[in-house]
Length: 158
Image (cartoon, rainbow, N blue to C red; front, side, top):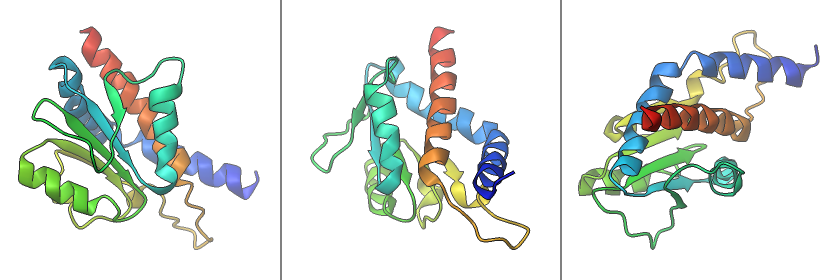
C-alpha cells in the first residue's frame, strides 16, 4: 500500500472514532437551523474546502453561510470554526465573550475550552511509527463536514 493511501486510511479510521465529538458539533450547529438562525462557517487555510461542500454541493448544509469579519452574528446563530492551527482563536474568544455558541475543529488552539463542541485534529493525525506525517487537513475537514452534515440532517428529520 502506498504511503498516502496508508496515512489517509489511518486518518479516516481515527476520525471515525470521534463520533461523540461529531454528534456534539452537529447538535450545537443544528440549534441554528431549528431556531431559523444561520450556521456561519468560519474556515481558515485549507479548511476552506468545507465552504465549497457546504454551500455549493447538490445538497448544501441547511442554513449555512460563509462567515466574514463583517458578519452580524445573533443569539439564534451558531458558528463553526475550522482552523488548521490557531487562526480561529480570536474569533472563538469574541464569540465566547458575546455568549454565542460555537463549534471548533483545530489542530492547535488556546481557546478550545471556550467551545461548546471541540474536535481536536492533532489527536487524529499522530503517527506512532516514527514515519513523517502527512497532514491532509482539508480531507480531514471534509470527512468531518460530511459526518456532521449527516448527523444534522438526522437530527432535523426527527
